[in-house]
Length: 91
Figure 1 (cartoon, rainbow, N blue to C red):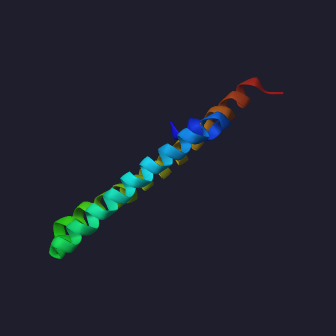
Figure 2: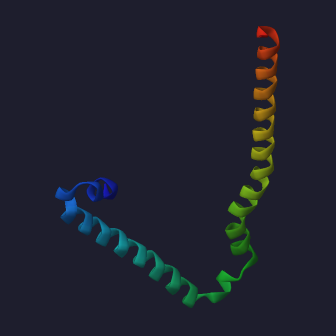
């Protein structure tokens, strides 16, 4: 909704309200995290917390070689198909 509101001049007031709501929500989440950290700082440095934090990075790092290999194979297959087509059509 905010994207539509920012695209049209008639929705300037709506954009301001939505920005305020999103900012309030974000600050609330940040305050909640800071209070939880201040209440129990040991939970932040626990091994389980770091495993949960690093898991998305591990997934990304393990997916990149697959994506690269798939891109190479797609390019190779496209070139092979093009060469086969050009070999059959000839000048």
